[in-house]
Amino acid sequence: MTSSNQGRLIVHDPTLRDGQHAVRHQLDRHQIGAYAAAANAARVPVVEIGHGNGLGASSFQVGHSKISDDEMLSTAREALTHSKMAVLMAPAWGTSADLRNAVVRHGADVARIAVHCTEATAAERHLGVIRELGAEAQAVLMMSHMADAGQLAEQCALLVGYGAQAVGIMDSAGFYLPEDVTARIGSIASAVEVPVIFHGHNNLGMAVANSVAAAEAGARVIDACARGFGAGAGNTQLEVLVPVLERCGHATGIDVRRLADAADLAGQTLMPAPPSIDSTGLASGLAGVFSGFKKPVLEAAAREGVHPWDLFQELGRRQVIAGQEDVIPEAARSLATRGADR
Image 1 (cartoon, rainbow, N blue to C red):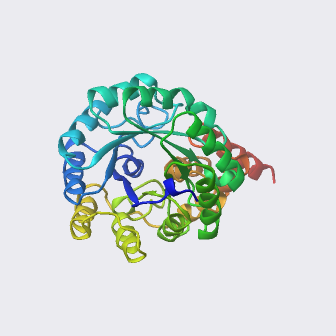
Image 2 (image 1 turned 90 degrees about the vertical axis):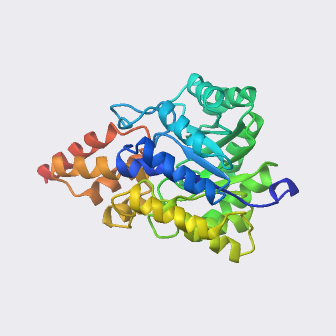
Image 3 (image 1 turned 135 degrees about the vertical axis):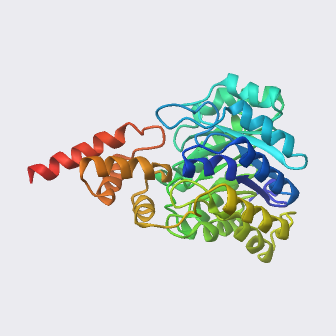
């Protein structure tokens, strides 16, 4: 690990972006403003805002957000007087114009580009735009369990070459165990001289342990959400992770007591119930399928009369990734037809 990967760990809070998946992207202005203010008071370093799938993603295919990107960003920017404001964009949904709007009009400090784990080249143009605009350019590889440690390191090195100032991986399906994280983060940290990012999901109940493993292996940016608010079985639980990291010797600069207050607010106002590892979340993790597919899988399985577990396994066999939601109903129909033919 190079010395540039060392230093204080930065906690990145995507509660107001990833959490949108759990409520069909229906957070309103008051909810966003109140939680952003609470996270700011707790001195959370970075707070990420937006539709669950990122800038420009509000659509029929993945769900319309309750309020526009502009409304979300302007509301959060007003509340984030200490914390940096971050946005995420996937090239399948957003455009360079969306990035310019977020940075120039709304003052986003950090912009992340999210691409599939073997498609770093898709981020090149957008990372260049972010650097030109003067925001911090980051890049993350989604569905990272689909690539080995060496492949991920190579992809992250490409991203750094394109201008990324921090790079890393998303455990989009909540598939990893700590040793998986250690191998991948260690390989990436040895290959790049910028901070390494880890974003965990909790389908197998390992998100906090995986995040600690990432920090121990050299990650310097760790994502976590209040109450674990996020897609499927949820994300790494922010108010649990931070004191655990502190006990492990990783200073975060966050006020833990005020962070607990922010988590209480999130639990009371953002979500009908905290995420839990139910049978479908477990099936998603074991199959290595994007956590955000939970609701469309349940709907398609019920419509076609197939078991959600079988549908997750079918999607895993097909290596379906985020953005391929249209495959879910077809896969359910295929399972139903095969079952009828037996």
